[in-house]
Length: 139
Image (cartoon, rainbow, N blue to C red; front, side, top):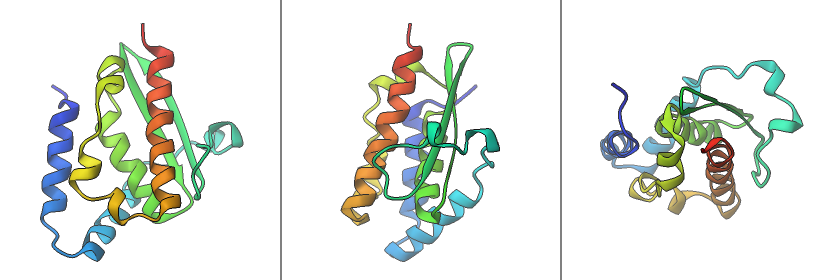
């Protein structure tokens, strides 16, 4: 059985709690991004770019059996790690659950607090795009 959004957020928070130093958290975030499955080349086009990100982030989503699935890639390591975390939490979830979740883990791990304003805006843009996909498929 798949974990709920809150259970996945708790897992991520506990993983980040293991690191005391912010640089260690960044290194972990980069490692998370490296494990992201490659995005099929047909989605590496302007049609799939997330607007509002300083880095390039391509996001593809599809709906299957009442659940949303996301795939993504980025041209920068930290941004790739951020989108990988969002995919981990939201992919495979029901559309209503995605629309309802506040994604509290972002603040719990102090992610936004340590990002530049440009990257913070990009994070918000990624979340908004993922929720927009869920809204488009929501019944």
